[in-house]
Image (cartoon, rainbow, N blue to C red):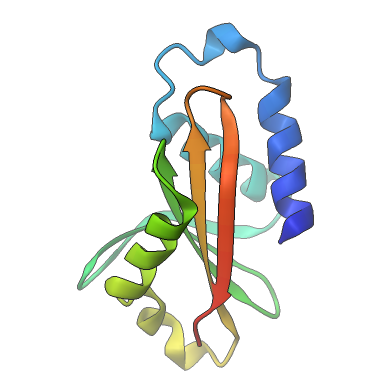
Length: 121
């Protein structure tokens, strides 16, 4: 996960500042979605569940990552939402490890400010 975050930070650093007009969370979310898809990684965004909507789910051959994005808040808050809303339970039948990843995006630095990951199931 550290390498993935490092790559994402590098990509965001390469985007010219004037494309970040209003720094919306959705801008970062869409960019991450596109990057994973173009790399051939199965990615779904805005996945509906009985307890709410998961920002993104990334599935590899061996793991499932549930990503929650926050803008100018904290990675802990994003990860806490995944756990509080029990988003990981949707994937219990997959038999793959499920990792929750909280990602805090910063409008000031126009990048990922912090992140936190935890195995959930």
